[in-house]
Image 1 (cartoon, rainbow, N blue to C red):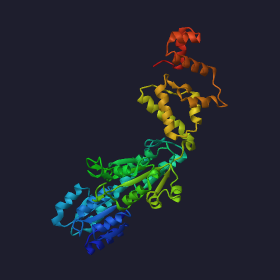
Image 2: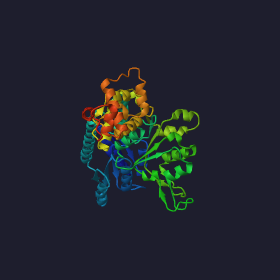
Image 3: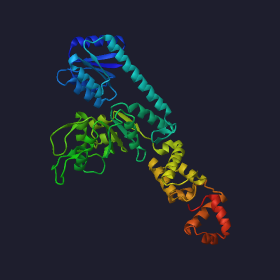
Image 4: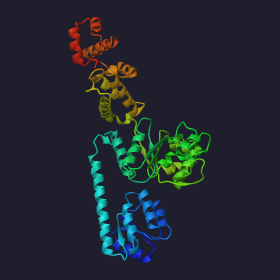
Length: 445
């Protein structure tokens, strides 16, 4: 376990460091809260022993900043008798426990073991949760293909870390779903998740949306507005289509990531923020950097970890799962009882290339379920281009029964389910037509 000891008394530092290192822990010592906070920019600690009385920032303020930035880091306050009330108050602010001076090393060791046991239990719970995730996917994401399993593995690894991530993938592959999943699995899960699309906006509009503005900053600014970055304090910011951000705004975003502060438009007053940045793009950012369209320093700041989402065509074994998922979703939404897809419709949807990826498959199923009149989706429920694709397939041989069903369905739709007129066109007795409608699930409802 990694431990930090923050106390301005060298003797306290040495005693705690010696005792804890004998227990097998890695220990670093600091004489002030400012030193600790600077070190936390580089690496986290599992446990911090923190004196209440320190030069500069006092221990209570340091505690608040540590818990705001790293909620899962445990803090044990060190206090003299005069600061006992402050230490008790620190427990309310998130401290794990407190120790009174003069320190008893056995008490230090016992508390450290308690923290270690607690962390082991939390880790076991996380591992159990990961094993119990549905075999079909992770969260709202569906997939059993090797490529998607790799994506889920990276998400689980990177979510608890306070680092930036670039999510690369074509439109419709689920980049925002990945970003939301990372946030949900992170220590920031109870803080805001704010998404912003960087494409199609002027620099001024992006600045006012991200940074907010003061009243009177420009014509029409009749009231102060809190921006997306300020709203997301202690949470996660998702910058979608980051490759479309204007070059001048790229520089401003870089400064925010480096300095952890912003100023609203029309104000020079800096506002300190704690943010995690996730970015997504369907562009080749490396090429954009090489061509001078994207800042190299911003690219490296964001690209601590990269997650690449496969095209749907590269994970075809996931298509049946996705079909069933969206079929259940939209059947429930539209209050319909759709049992499944017939052989023709399923064959077409399995073989289609899906240039729009998962989003296109979702849109196809939503439209098909909304318009379906039977209990099974048929080829005629699919968009015309897919019906034409099916007709052009060299192996597309439908059975006589399937052709009869499709033709009866077509006539019923033309006559708006007028049974007398439909029976006349089909040259069938009405009772025979009614039996066939029941057989094929072609009732109007």
